[in-house]
Image (spheres, rainbow, N blue to C red):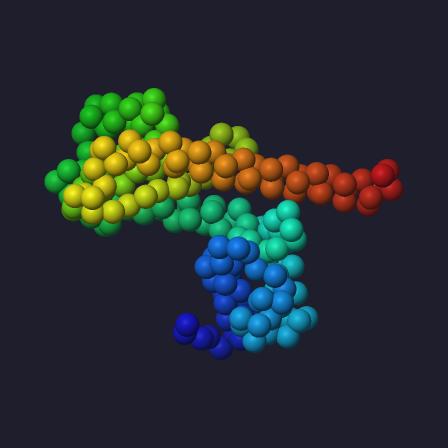
Length: 193
């Protein structure tokens, strides 16, 4: 990873990347060992990331990526200029056809794309919703079109939908816990708890 002249920023980015690449979450000890940080530095960085919702703790107290990372990904995708990204001859650009395709996606609960963004590449995606039913992101499976055909997507869809529901549920439980913690802190500050 390239470094900067701001060493603490480099360490913060390293911790975020560790969170992003760890499927089991990150303990304080794991962050120390993996990145060569002392305990105090690792703790302060993880707590600062947690306070900004870049990191969160799971039910075991292990640090995982927080909702802000998902929000960043969503913002990035929303800001992409599709014409700069590139279109294929299969990309749906006609309004009526696009509306039909969107209605199909809504009815099924997932989207299927075959060569629309990248030639010879198919994908199936299910949405992840926020607390106000806004789409925060998606879970998707991508692959070569000759291996990821409609028939295979029909088998993948129920699994993908289940996982998207689980992620949505977990994210929204986290929002509820954060809201509860925020309310409790306000009550303590007022001395009403």
